[in-house]
Amino acid sequence: MLFKQIFERALTDPPVQSIRKSKSFHPSAASIQYRDPQTETVETHGGCLRAEWYRLKEEPPTEGSDAPGIMKMTAGNVLQPMVEHAFMVAGLWRASETSFFHEKMKYSGRVDFWLVDPTQTMADKEVLMPCEMKTIGKYAEAGTCFPKAGKMMPKTDHLLQVVPYIDFYGQYMPNMKLAMFYLGRDGMELGEHHIWLAGAGKYGCALKDEHRYIVVQNDTGVYELPWLTVRGIYKRTIELAKFVQKNECPPPSYEDQWDNRRIAAYAEIGPTFGRLNKTETTAVKKAIKKANEDNDDRLNDDARPFVQKGDWQCRYCGWYTKCRAGLSHVAKPVFRDTGDDELTPAAPPAVEDADAPI
Image (cartoon, one colour):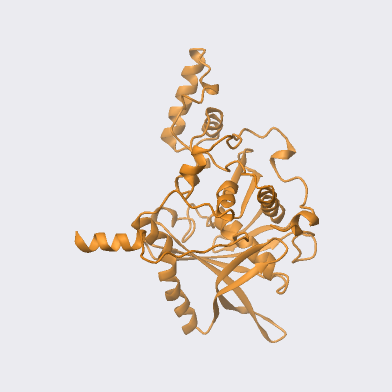
């Protein structure tokens, strides 16, 4: 149809292109690698080091987004003013889209909006809370907007994103908490989570308090996440900074096709971990059993994958084609915990590394 085509073209190929260059790190690309306490496998969450390297080097993306994808990504820009207006009416709104720059770790970001905490005062002054808002699809609303199996929890990637926010503003606002809102694009239900950093040491200094970790509170309880540490996030930031300084492209953090050993490890864990669904888990276990019966070393033959499955991050990467075309090495496969401390951050970042120019 005529107008639909015009509409989609205006979204995917606008006459005036928006160009945003930045040599600083983006909180939305924060990442961490840690040993999962439930599965004892080493997992990576958050941004891909290689994708961030491409962005910092101003490499043009090789993939584009279709109109529905663009609308999903920008839905928050449309819905956020509606939420803010309600808080304005309630007299709690104070500011929107405030920028900050974390000098020590070279993060630049923007807080969606600020609200007054009506339950707290300090020396007769208002206590403000930075707020982050996320819109989310139908199948992800359960557990973020409302309880799933009696529990709510923000997405791990979103938790990583707000750590630089809390770490930066915590220098000036001790014991600060951040409010994260989820608004379902389908059910339009609003979920609320409060997030802060807990741990040993004086609050607010990134390099002295690297053992601080994320704590989440919502309607279903208070959850401590000691494996999501400031140290782990900033260690990855410094690792990326060193690749940039050396002009060396880092290996990708994710794989579009998992190797068979990794698939077998996820099948052993089972579908509750969320990497393989029930059907895939059953199929992989049958394939492994048959390979063992036939003395077939398929476990080490990645040309015959047990199932076509990889990290979803690769499917949404703007540099997917470029990354895979020049792929000289791949991310390490994930195995059961071997006790190797190198699989998780073992030492706090050095001050000289954090201060090095990017």
